[in-house]
Length: 126
Image 1 (tube, rainbow, N blue to C red):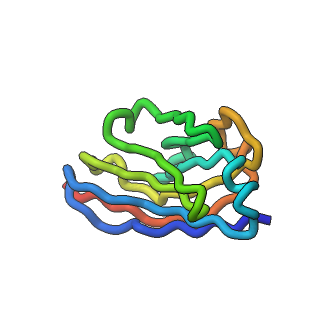
Image 2: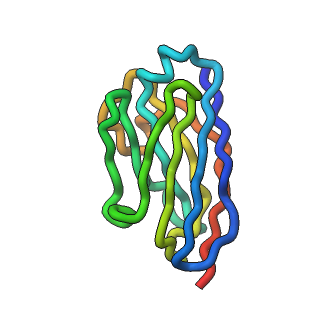
């Protein structure tokens, strides 16, 4: 069983930056390093959508809407994945969720991920 805890959300003005963190526990260090990690977001009235993912080998995927503005990274020594969000826009306002899929590859949909955090709210004001 893997537990995920997100942090770093908050209120920021358009054009600003935030860094989200997701700490994983319940998995040994070796297992975390073999886990596909993803960031999703859900805005009010909308479906949850993928923002970015990072594989065990460091391969990264970004949604078109965040390419060039967001950067996903991981620190396997700390069992933590990060999402650096720059040039934030009001349309980035959402609850951001961290997700994990042990030994996963290329997963981009909600149903493909096995574990989820509780989410952290990001509000971007115009």
